[in-house]
Image (tube, rainbow, N blue to C red; front, side, top):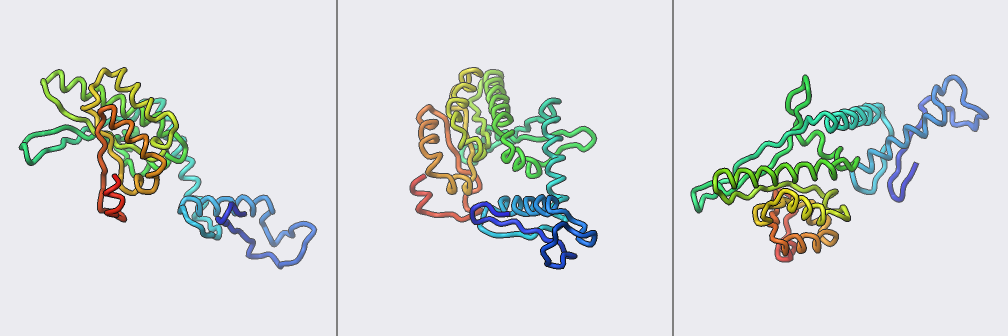
Length: 238
């Protein structure tokens, strides 16, 4: 099975290589099963994000099954309000004081405790769930910043991580501005964090969006700079 320059392969080890009218009992795999296995192998190639081919093995099936289970668990988590936000303080060494907080999503799964974002964020991105969850994170973080600044007479900035799936969403800018308006938060108290690798890979597609949001008073931060393929040319443009 192929898609552009991506190929998934499956074969029957017991096949004689003859042109059988129908598979004999030694093959033990129907054509439909072989095609399904090839589709699974193709899916694994797509996950790698580069031109390549893969041959099906049963481990791929287990990975796909685990992913399907995770998707189902995430849908239940949304319905049951199992996601929470932790706020990591950001400290300014120059002023010797706190400058704000970074909002970090956590999944408190019943019977399992806290689940690391690294195990579910990519699935949210693949399924599109990250759009609605991202809006919930942004709304909750903005409400937190509004409340804590009023309560303690501070000017803390709340920082929210943004995925490439959110940035590429056609309505992203308007959704951000709508949330700010609904929570009545001054835009200068919101910072959007974007990882270096995501920004560089999608720079042309999101550049104008970031410029627009910055013009509205929202800060943009480049996260994890230097951990990937840093480029001074990109840095100058940014």
